[in-house]
Each structure stands twice: as C-alpha cells, then as structure tokens.
Length: 272
Image (tube, rainbow, N blue to C red; front, side, top):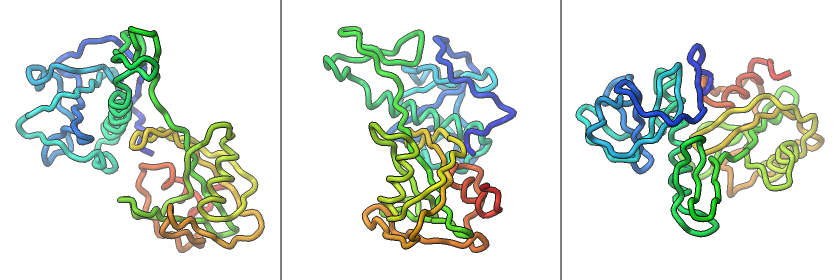
C-alpha cells in the first residue's frame, strides 16, 4: 500500500525547523502539485525556490530529509503543476506518500483559517501540529475521518461494487464513514445494508490505511453474508454491485490501496 515505504522511515512529529537548501518543498496550488516535467524525480528543493517563496511550513521527514509545504505559486523552469491523482502511480513510492500526506495537511490548513468559536484568524503553533486562536485560545487539530472498507464474502464469491458519478470507475468494495455513536463494526453492518441490502456476520478486522486523498483513516474488515444474498443496490451511490467468483476477479494488483490489497487476498484465498 502507498504508506508501506520501507526501508524508508516516515517521521510525522512536528518540528519548528528552518529548511536547509536540500529540504524538499511541496508547493500546492488549487489542489495541484508542483513537479518536474517528464521525470520521476519529485519536488523541488528549498535551494531552488527560496527566492521565489515567502511562505513555508514544516511537514514531516523521511529518513531525516525534511519536507516543507508552500502555499505560494511558484514559476520554476522545468516544473509544472499537475493533478494530485499522479500520486497513484508516481515513483519512487515514498515520494508519492509524501505528496498525498502533504495534500491532506494542506486541505486541513485551507479549511481552518478562522476560529470556529470567535471568528478570529488561526495561527500555526510552534510546538506541535495544531492551529491556535490567540484571541480565545481555541485549538484545532488535524482532521482525520474514520471510514471502513468492507470485503463481504459469500462462500467462493466476493461482493464488488462500482461508484456512481465518480472519476474512479474500477471495481471496489463497500465503503463508508463512521457516524457519531457507532462502533466500527456497527458502521460495517450499516454501510453494507445501505449500499447492498444484505446482512453480514463474522466481522473481522484486517488492517488500516491513512488515505490522504480524502482525509481518511481507512479500516478494513472481512465479513460474511448472513442469510439471503439477494443484492438491493443503492442506485444513488453505486452503478453496480455484484457477487464475483474468486477465479473470475480480474482486478489488477496496484500496491496502492487497502481496497486493492483486500480484493487480492480474497482472490488468492488468503483472507482467512
């Protein structure tokens, strides 16, 4: 998955550090990211852009190499702004993970410029990753939305779905956000019922994944259909929901998402 970047080590502890000339700068404008044209090398370094930017904020480090976020628009020869979707296929993978995580943090900054209690401007804390109101003392921590990814099995078949009215058109699994007052297992039951109209049992946690594309922390579960396997699809959310036999699953492995990994575990008979 995208966060599995070993042998590289990701350190997300906030540090009040100034960049060195070889620190990476991730410049984001209108949801697009500054990257070199036609190369796999990623992100300019501070020495290239320090005379072009006024604003930057420490993000994290990977193997003691610091990354900074800049909200300034940068005109740098040989570079251009491209869609964040490039991080689904960008190599090397640890740089793709850095880009997705920066996108997550940038969106949090954008959505929290003003205090929700008194309306004054929020400022960056210098000791931890938090936004603080110097007027009323309100603090705002990064937004992380808990969600479930659910692989519903039916003997030798897996429930696969396609989203409706989304750019992503490949097969996926049942997914949805945790609601206030729910356990994650209750979210699994509700989402499967809402999207496919079937009951489930034997809910088993698999693993989690940070998913910066949508500000989520995804939690994967396997479960089994309980009783009637007739699908009643949510036509507002999905364009397709079908039972697919193990040996007919044609999804290709992408080493990116929790969804993809869970589908392949089932396809190879390793989901037990």
